[in-house]
Length: 226
Image 1 (cartoon, rainbow, N blue to C red):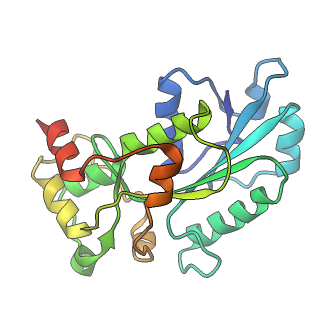
Image 2: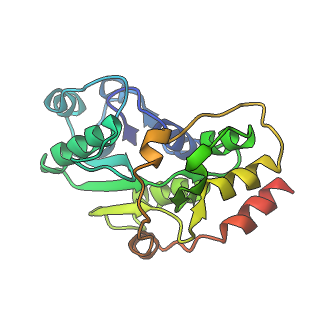
Image 3: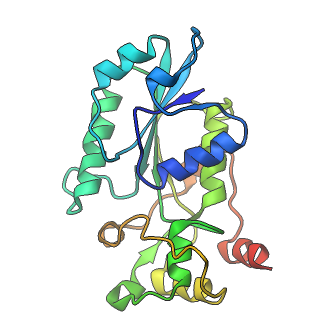
């Protein structure tokens, strides 16, 4: 079972909802956990709250492990406040003594993904059109979490969940805009100020650890759009 300390920020909340749709029980707060002694997974990201880790541990009152849903660019010297906050959260939880797995997500695309829908609306990109990224399919991000939870990947370390291909934001926008506007106009997930701090990621460790080989992005998106 997964338990969260409170509301999470995107993409964490969306990813956990997709994992729950696969049949993994999800408790919105530690106090919502059913009675029992079985171990649980505490999933943590930033959100519109600051939680007391000691109080959360006391409320869980059973063995647990920690899943940190972070984002590319988390660093103590990042310019974006959200990325600095994620770094502090990572450091705090890794020092808590529980088995901890950290996933830093690249921009996620695919049907329904907030960023993908936003790009379908043809936003003005300006200089950001040249920004180079390693986007990942949202479906691969969900599969990553599922494999961690069911034991197909060891619960340790930190990984950049990022595709092996390099795309510019402008190229992604062109591909998305070809589908026409979505009903949901989406949002900048991650925020544009964070995208400005992205550096090209190393996808190899993630792919090897979780036994994943992402399909070419253009191929996967074209099949979904058909």
